Length: 306
Length: 201
Image (cartoon, rainbow over all chains, first blue to last red; front, side):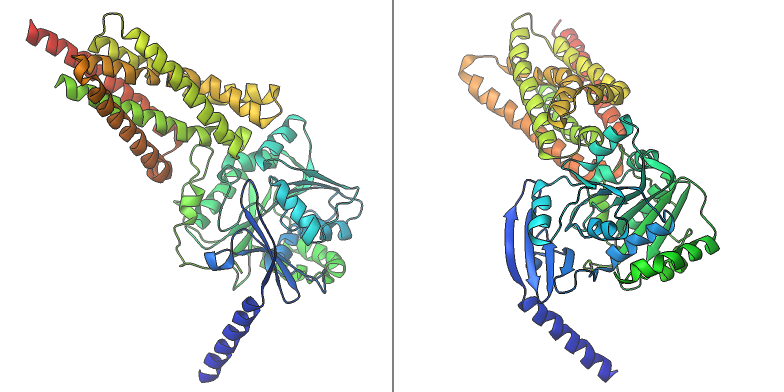
């Protein structure tokens, strides 16, 4: 008991010293938010508000080892590959530091990537500070994710892998968390396509989000890791493949993903198509979407994103 | 009684205007996003519509002003919120298919959906002033009180909608409730006018 207390104290000091060494290398106010880039040791992080004002790290890279994915949620997003193992067309909504496109480019150099980011300043910062170098296979669209999706539906485009990473625990674009929006995403899926979303599991919103994904997709899976309040939701417009299929795919994906520390075998076992949530929670729709007000209603107490 | 009902109606008008304006952001976001330009479109259209409403309301008050006619403004306002409820999505889809730039898309959609009802609701204030003023000496005081009441209504409509109504109800439910509120206002104006007329006769 005493030992564990001491260890905790040591850990606390270590974290405090890390923070003390954090150095802001860039700061700007964009049309949508404040953007801060902070160096702490080897890591460089993106924030949308200052730490002392409750800002959370949106994304971090390890400058000494760019292959190391600092945040577990980024690694967890790759669980989507179990459902779409060889994506040819990838759509990402929410660029962040551009980590995911970089890794996907390394994994699938032939794949075409459409990267949608509402904030031109985030695209600039990703390029200037996070070593994000768009390749010829990447198209960057600086516009609202919902508007992009609606246009893409009109032109009948399809994607194999759709990644939704547009939420922070500070602000949720409410029109990107409704049944209608998810159904629009479903309409953009190719026959073997999958939607993978990074969401949060630390508030009342958890239940509404579960109900909303269930309402939009015939098959939904959830992936959580202990100690993290991030949750990955996976939506499919087809039946869930059997466990053996997932495990076979995990084995063939594992060698390429090992370099990035993605425990794909573990994810194959941890994906849940059934989980407990408040079944009476209302489905969020374009007509009822108080996501930020619900996110403010913590059921688990205030927490920090990783 | 007559005065009180006019103030109450002006309050409700202010309340409804800002409640609809706030819901406007939610209504447009699935088609045009929720960026600052969408709010720019909405606020521009509401300000423009209100300014024309003031002009028209003032003109209308020149011709035999009465509480009954005042009530009709509320009925007309309620009727014009109807299309927003029934055909809102069709209108936005139509605009979306024709205008690529979400700035102009949201501006045109705002004009189509919020323009007319807001012109009608804007007519309420100047018309109320006309009904309340009995002599020029008190004109400023009456106008001041009227602005106080209707702007207070706007403030409460804004707060109630953004803090609570959107958490409790769907957008359409709130719009229906606002329509009903306007219909009640209109009926109250007609009823009081009749009752007053009889009392005077």
